[in-house]
Image 1 (cartoon, one colour):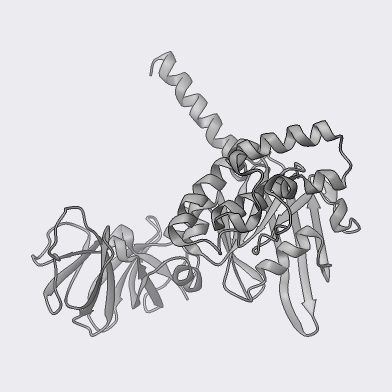
Image 2 (cartoon, one colour):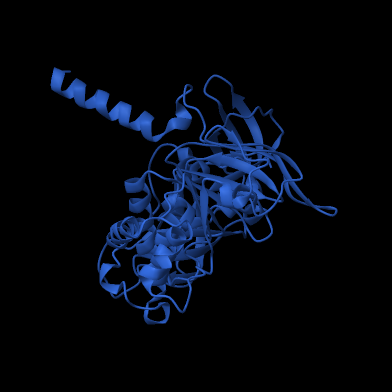
Length: 391
């Protein structure tokens, strides 16, 4: 390797560690949640959770309704008092610090913009409450308007704005006081699908430019995958898995995470043999007798019951028998299909009688569907796509 290439590689490595501080053993967490619980009578909304979030992260807490994610966010903000545990932000214990004195701000799902105020009045509200000098307020509001691309709409009132523009007003108002942490409660839920996708990238770019730590709660899996440096999947008041979106999607820790974080096919199987050196097992799928191979860090023995999980996009569908090593191959009949433009979803009834879902990209322009109802097809996928789950 020449000196120039070595320097580039070194720079990339440093950038990677800098942007993934959880991989750096010497990095100190910016937010520490230790044994945090919230009890409402006999109900545990948040059940003794621990979590480290690092500076400049865009961290997402993902879960369904009632999982405890919003309660956790409210405890970070100081709106709810923990029953037990500790929250530390930038080295300071928040236990006795009220919401108005915490170095955080919160953007609510409803946006809560003042309808009688203009855009610039909404954004400047917090600075005026803090009695900043008028010139400082004008300067900071002008900068923020430019940052969120609302300069030309500064004199408009909320009812004259689109949903996406109101969202940016709420975001600018939350950021104008330069908090150390911004908490976002379902920030994009009120937007339509196309605008939501566009706004996700705007939010990521804004967070990167400002360098503020964002903590987002959402029930939307695609939103969590797009936005997050890391994501925590939450259920029944506990964190089930914490990792990068890729880690959680490709290597779910259990069946709940696999099912909640995207769409997936499950196959019951019985372990036939194991290889500890390569961390692999051979298992036989229920009913079909098909043997599959999968990698796993868990310890299994022959005869153990496992679940083999395969994502729909990992499965190839064709009308000709596929060839290749390490392929799992089964036959089936197209029972249902849906055309989404860029991709098609097929529900295939396999020889065992179970339904297997396949997601196929539509690479070529055509007004004719590649497959039709009742077509006989072959399904195949590589053994590396098998996720082995113990539960």
